[in-house]
Image (cartoon, rainbow, N blue to C red; front, side, top):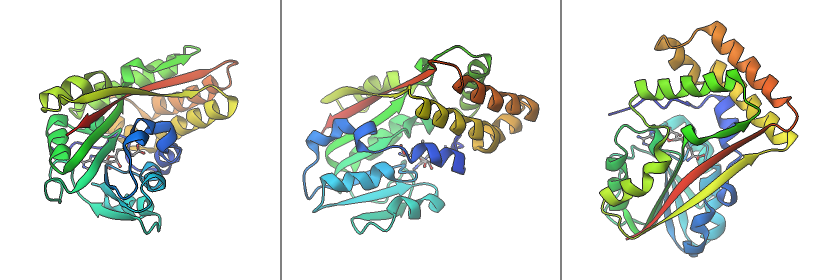
Length: 259
Ligand SMILES: C[S@@+](CC[C@H](N)C(=O)[O-])C[C@H]1O[C@@H](n2cnc3c(N)ncnc32)[C@H](O)[C@@H]1O
């Protein structure tokens, strides 16, 4: 059941995740957040979205939950409205209906049993359960690059070996229905990296991640790649970012289910 988290928490990964906030990653929730709400952020990672939620519930609180204990202190970040909890989405340490809203961003794609996770999140939610994931197979970039093509192929292979689904975004609405969440809306959020600054930031992130993150260690452990190839992929990312007009677009599908 415990799948390897194939990004891991290397600084190259966290540098990318720390860019996220409510406005660019969870804005579909803004209209349902009320002052005083109790919110649970499952798989909070470094917590930039988690802490940003406090803006919308200043009289309430946010619980930052992650399976990885070392990341929780950063997620709380000294904010007195945020409480850190180490825990597993499959077995949340809370009573039924403990939170007004339960949220998970880019988490289900890393789980071997996402339906069980959705049911467990719904159990501890009172008003809404919300989850969003990208769809790796539908990521879009230009110009084409053999290194980026191979990077994606390797990502899919590592995920398959770990029995997780990086293309889960397109399935979230049907998964919600299977889990009995019939009253739900489907939203999309898009991250567009098209300025020189953002393209280099994204490419630098992946140039680091293909060498130093769990992506790298899993690719080597599973015999799917070699250190030489990973070095080539890192260089390929850096070269791609120098191309005029380079863009990278990621679409996430988000589910907002009323209970
Ligand atoms: C891609 S990160 C997303 C972090 C954050 N939600 C964000 O979007 O910036 C996925 C997070 O889920 C956590 N995670 C993975 N499996 C988990 C599980 N079974 N229970 C709780 N957290 C889990 C990982 O440790 C990681 O911090």
